[in-house]
Each structure stands twice: as structure tokens, then as C-alpha cells.
Image (tube, rainbow, N blue to C red):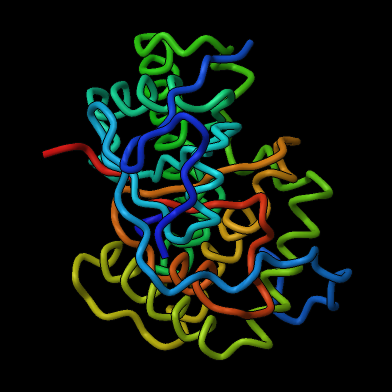
Length: 278
């Protein structure tokens, strides 16, 4: 969300297409171990999943199960990163219009609180980080709501455009975050990948300066805040299946969805790379 085998074919859907759907109405890593995780999805097939081109966008699910979630078309989460020029009005409007024709429900998440975490790790003073995160989140929310209306999404934008800070008190979110923290303690490969992503995000904040080891470790908090959506957005939004996606590869998503591990997403979770057709 942050910068940063052939699939089974649904009935009546030609391989290589996306089925259109009718539209419908900072915790410490020393936290106690969470409750047992839900049953994970079986290990994925090794054959690549073909990209599915439909209209203005290409969609490449990470695994055959992710392709099944795309075909189900129940729900998609749109993560709109702050400070990311990709989410300008025209691309966002086109993306929302495209998604609303293929998924029964959309929810947009603007990661304001995890952006603040990243600013703090980059060395911003708390008051400055608070103000910058608040301003950029307000600007992003206004842009998303305008694009939502212009795209003709047949759902209330006010009900489906969320700040991350408004979701963190949700008991399901809190339980999922504990799972993330627990997995980071148990899984060295996952921790190393998150540390690498933290360094990259902070290097951008620091305008190319390499962050210190302490900054990179502190910067993992933004991923700790956002990974609950990768493994549990269906539970968070009360739907039977849910797709998260981004417009460029996210290494930690590949790790979660394509190999066994303590944070393996359940079957109702999917992930895809969705990019404009060029």
C-alpha cells in the first residue's frame, strides 16, 4: 500500500480477462502473542498466473488463489499513499471507475498514521510530523472523494473512504496487527524484507540520504500498520473475499502470498499488481 500454474477460469469468463461485476449499493514488537491465526491458504502452484487485461488496466494476481479472489469480484481495497504522484486525479478517477465495474464494493484507505510513523523515523519532530501528515491526508481525502464522484462509483464516498487512523481502534485490526508483530519476531526472512522496504521508504523521505540502522528499524512501524490489510481486509471490511493491490511490485506481498510462513494470508485474501495499459 505504501511506497511500496494457470489460474482457474470462472464460468463464462475467457482466460486473460477480468469478469465485470455489477455495482452494489505504534505498538512495540514485544507485544504478547496473538490468538491462533486462521487456516492459511494452501501453498501456491509454481506456474505463473497470466496477466488479465480488461479495458484501461492490466491485472496480474500473485497466485491462482489470488486470481480466484479477483474473479469473485466481491471487494477491493485501494491504498492511496501520501506524497505519491501516481495517485493524481486522472489516474485515480480511471482506476476507481475500472474497479467499480469489477468489484461489488470498494474501500479506499489513506495511511495517515503510518505516514506519520515514517516521518518520525526520518527525524521529524512530533509536532511537525503530526501537522504534515494531517495536511497531506486531508488533501488526499478531498482528491479521492472528488475522483470517486467523477468516476460515478455507485456507493457513498463518505462511507467508503477511510483514514487509517480511524480504523486502528477496530478490534479486528488490533488482532491482525498483533499477528504482524508476532510474525516479525518469528520470521527472519519477513523481517529482513520489511527492513529493506523501510530503508527504501526512508531514503525517499531523506532525499537520497541513507537512513541509519536505528531509523530503518523504527521505520518498520509503517509496514506493521499496513500489513493487516494484506492478510485480513476481508475480515476488516466484513466481506467474503477481498483484494489488495498496488501499481508496482511490493516485495513483502510476494513473500506473504507465495511461500509458507506465520503470516500466510487466508484463502479469502488476494493480492495483485494492477497497472494502466500502456
